Amino acid sequence: MLKRRHVLSMKDFSREEIDEILETAESLEPYARGKGSDILDGKILALMFFEPSTRTRMSFETAMKRLGGMTINLGSAEASSIAKGESLADTIRVVGGYADAIVIRHPKEGSARLAAEFSPVPVLNAGDGAGHHPTQTLLDLYTIKKESHLDDLSIALVGDLKYGRTVHSLAYALSLYGADIYLVSPPTLRMPEQIIGDLSRMGTRVREVSDLREVIEEVDVLYITRIQRERFPDPVEYNRVARSYSINTRDLEGAKPELRIMHPLPRVDEISPSIDGTKHAVYFRQSFYGVPVRMALLKMILED
Ligand code: NCD
Image 1 (cartoon, helix red, strand yellow):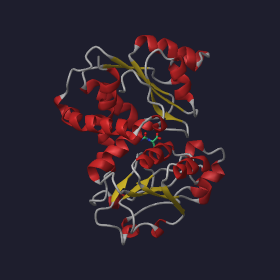
Image 2 (tube, helix red, strand yellow; image 1 turned 90 degrees about the vertical axis):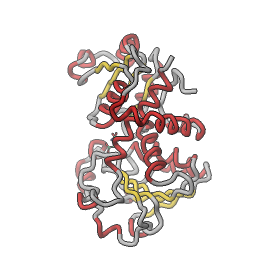
Image 3 (cartoon, protein in one colour; image 1 turned 135 degrees about the vertical axis):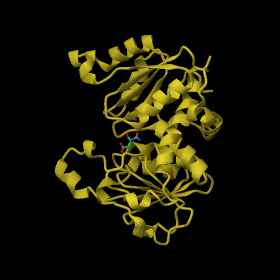
Image 4 (cartoon, helix red, strand yellow; image 1 turned 60 degrees about the vertical axis):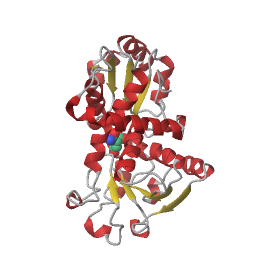
């Protein structure tokens, strides 16, 4: 079903397809912890990261290697022929000749879709500017399924909803599961109108609030995000909203005992370390789940 397919946006996926990916991830989880497998023996995954990354890059690499495959890495743009003026289209055509699939992260929205037009092999979008981050969403859904519940979910997306690509992708996917979504952000960092419109058309109950206290008693999951400093055209604007949300144990008063707190990471100061030791915190397990979920994707796309 996913064989040789691009992974560019959650909008391209049905609920049945997502369920199959999550089930495959579940079956591969034992192999993500050291047992390993050789189902992708001889396959090569190319990593092209034009923006900083720790989790996405390293968990893709781990996933490929745990399945017996190999990775090649473009390295920094300065060290590649991009620095000589080569276009993204040409680079993709060339790398597509070396690898069986390409993972790309790029600061420009739409770059992964553009890459897919020129690539002879499947392209996986690992974040295109403020656009989408579909593989993060799949691991977020896997986390919710394992640590909370996907059915009848009430969730608050908190922080930078304007520039945060993880929340854009996640909101579309949550719509497929009938979640109630609260959007909690400063007024200048609201979820784009177009996405809110799409969610409403999909029949999703969406409510915008600016104060977390209004929803803390309602939600099963708090999904907190970093203010995306690198996307602000003006540093003064950033400073105005930096640290607008900084959650500590006091902010959780009245919360459900089974509340789960998620964060795609990296955190700057959105979540106090005092929360790390509570049963609410699942963000470090969430980053581990990137391995089985990316293993599932690579297996489904690349296996012969
Ligand atoms: C996110 C990203 O790059 O969009 N990081 C990640 O992939 N886990 C979130 C962020 O940078 O804030």
